Length: 259
Image 1: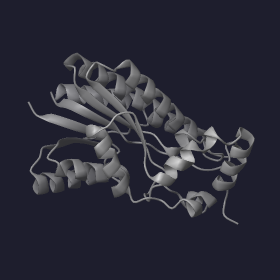
Image 2: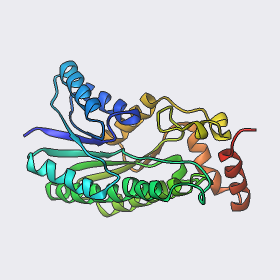
Image 3: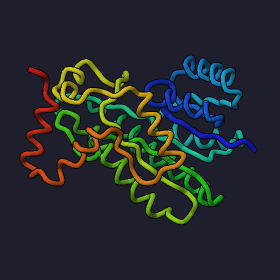
Image 4: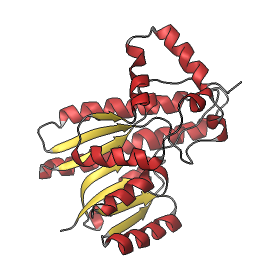
């Protein structure tokens, strides 16, 4: 029976680069995203170039029922998922009292609820087989919640805490759960407002291919959490020796628009 890596948010950015790199390692893929045209194109390219099996499933995971439906689709098609990458996510930027409540509730569904649902459903199956890998994509902001990214920061703090605790629970079962924590990445995730903040001036975005390389390595061979890049690792540790009041002022300045 063929084994598959299931990758959400596969049609662009880190997900696209991870799909390409996993395909180059001759791993079969189940690609999940909203853009069917892009998924069809990726399926054709990756099967032609690498001779692997590529399935795709169109889902909008900002509705947790779609995540549950995704698992049922995989079961119905009798596809064996031996590795899961919860990469799909969205963010926004702005004053909390001015940003869209509807968008933020969808963000919570996508970044948290669907991650929990897919992790639970596939982890149970993996544990019964005593083998499997799950990688959740968190963020540098998991360690440093930024003003103007209030809900996004909170969702990624959840992802990291959730991943670390589930990893501990599943230790010894054969299921390895990891968290990838990138800093700024040069993708369509970033809006013009985000790009005009001091943060992006001080900490240049990394190419998604570089982040994907670290993600693939962590998924296939790693444990625990991985902060991508020395600068981001250093920044993630600043709260350990910087008073909270000073740290929040630094973060607020970084998250503010450039002057």
